[in-house]
Each structure stands twice: as C-alpha cells, then as structure tokens.
Amino acid sequence: MKRVVVTGLGTVNPLGHDIQSFWENLLAGTSSAGKITRFDASLFRTQIACEVKDFDPKRYLDRNEIKRSDLFTQYALYSASQAMEDSGLEVDKMDPFDIGVVWGVGQGGMETFETEVENYVKGEYVPRFSPFFVPRLIVNMASGLISMKFGLQGINYATVSACATGNTAIMDAFNYIRMGKGKVFVTGGSEAPITAASVGGFSAMKAMSARNDDPLTASRPYDQDRDGFVMGEGAGAIILEEYEHAKARGAHIYAELSGAAMTADAYHMTSPHPEGIGASKAMQLALKEAGLNPEDLDYLNPHATSTPIGDISELNAISKVFGSSPHLQISATKSMTGHLLGAAGAIEAIVAINAIKHQVIPPTINVEKLDTDISKDFNIVLNDPLETRVNNAMSNAFGFGGHNSTLVFEKLS
Picture 1 (cartoon, helix red, strand yellow):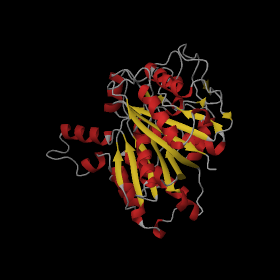
Picture 2: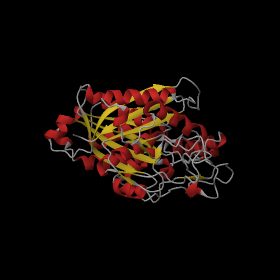
Picture 3: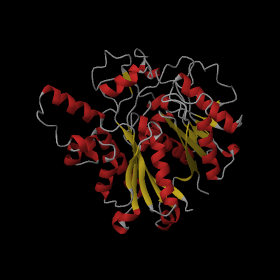
Picture 4: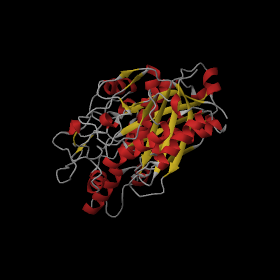
C-alpha cells in the first residue's frame, strides 16, 4: 500500500478564517459561542451557537460562485482554496485525472431549503422554485464545485455519515491514494446548519445546551453540569497526497495519515452504545492499520460534544483501548469551536495535525467541575495549552445512526 501524507490545510470556522488565526485562538482558549444572530431564535429552547463572523466569500470566490452556492458550499470552496494554495500544487503540470475530491457534508443546503420553501409558500415563486434550488441544496455540490474551480477530474463525490462525515471523507480519500486510484485528493467537510429548521430540530430533541444566559461557557465537555452541544459551522480542508509524489515535488509535509477505520454501533438512532463498543473497535483498527500500539499514542482529540451520555460513552471506549496510559493526553476542542456536525471531523483532524506540527496540545475549556463519573486516570488538558511530545495523534468523530470513525496521524520520520 502507498503511503499518504498531508501537504495542505485550510479552514473557515467560528475561531478564524484561516489556519493561523484558528490555531492561535484555540491555544488562547477562546470560546466562539454567542447568541444566534442569523434568525430570531427567541422561541427555541436553545438560542445560542458558534457562528462564523464577518465571513467574506469574495476573498476566494467570484460573484457567480457565490450566487449559485449555498453557504455550506461557500465554506467548502473557501477552505479548499486555502488548502490548495498552501499545498503549492501546480495542477496544470499534473494529469487532472490524478487529482480527486471527496468531501463530507452532513445536512447540505438547509438555508437554501428554508428560503425556497418559505418563498414558495408566500407566493413569491409561484408557480415555480428558483432554478438554483436543487444545485444549491444537494450535498455533492461542494465536491463538484471544488473540482470545477481547480479543474480536478479524478474521483469526485460527497460522503454523509452524520457527525462522523468529515472523518469518513478523509478516510475514503486516504484509501483511494493507498490503492493507487489517485495521487492527490482535496478532502474534508463543511456545514452551515445555523438555520431555524436545523437549530429548531436539534433544540426539540434537547440535544443542545440551553445555557442561553452564559453562551461563552455553554460548550463544556466533561463538566458535571454539561447539558448538550453548541452548534457550530464552517469547513476544514486537507490536501492528502501520495508520499513519493509529494517528496518528488519538494512539498511541505505536515504529517502522515497512517491509519483510519470506521465501525457501527448497531444500537440506537441517536445514542451511542453506553460501553463504547463500536467506538473502541474503530480506535483499535485505526491503530492497527497505523502499526501502532496503544502506548505509542501521544494525543487524542475526542468527539466529546458536551452531551451527558456521549462524553462518558467515548471515555469508556478510550479506557478499553488505552487503559491508564500515563502519557496519553486528551483535549476536547469543541469546547471552543462548538460542534460543526459534518465538518467536525475535518476541523479536529486539522487540530491533530497542528498538534504534531507545533508539539503543543490545545486545551479543553469550561470545565468547572469534572464529572464524577470520569476516572482520574485520564489526562485531560484543561484551561491552558500543553507543550509536550506529539509524534502520534488520533481524532475521533461519531454520528447519529451509530457511525464511528477514527483517524491516526504521525510525525513523518
């Protein structure tokens, strides 16, 4: 099997519109949560989210791209443009059929869906919808428009596995390169779910925090008083490349993606298995594929959404795999970014990659009182970043439907 490395990164998310600002705000322990400004959420149980502020798509998108795309696609194009620029790839010097796109989206064009249906009901579009309705709505349009923007003619499609989606897309791209079905892939995930329908639906499920009077501390993984996740939005893009190809062109290599796995809980529509059986198996398989033992892992970025059941279930799974490993460090960065649903895995993969690059682990914030059900054997990085050895890092992403996905990155030796 061919080796796969990371040669480009890009993002737009609630903590920054590029990798540098995102990373600086993570290390500073900055919360991005606040009152929802996109629509009137005053009638909902949950009225807070982690919004992307002051987003200007014109930096990377032209007028027609903006007009014809939903916000989730704009986020995708924006972050992918950064990653392509960062990678230094010269597409015109490659066979375009050697470069593919596998992009993850959990929900698709929710903003477009709401707007078009509302306009139809109001009679503004009678007797028809906008001709851009379907192209703006469908989840695969992000991957399609990325390929069109850069002339990439290799494998191209979208993955959907709820909040495991970002990792699933990266894993698929990883496997295609290993099998020789492409030399380079643009991969990652995007989501723009801060809309009335999406927030209203999750709010009705009581899956999200209702700490409306104190949004900055609402996302609080592992805290005794956590009451659900805080919704986020944005995108994370990663350029994966076959190692020999990257080396031959003198590319900057961030890390090697050495293992990836996915399992199913086969347990419940929305709740994870309480013992974390599927999650632990995904971690074990990813480590095995990477050729690592549990004691080799330095850092784990968990799914850790801040839900009472989910956080403990994942820690049960981590305990099954790693026991009381003395040097494994854990930090839950959703405490700062919120939960980006289909984009979460991509954003947190970037966190794992940057932890290896900078040899520092960002903190978990908002833990005022650690849940009494959490073993003191876990090394959870709280409040301040930790400078330490990070040669190997893992990122978990789980989703409704019982999807478990795990990635393992290594410092290139």
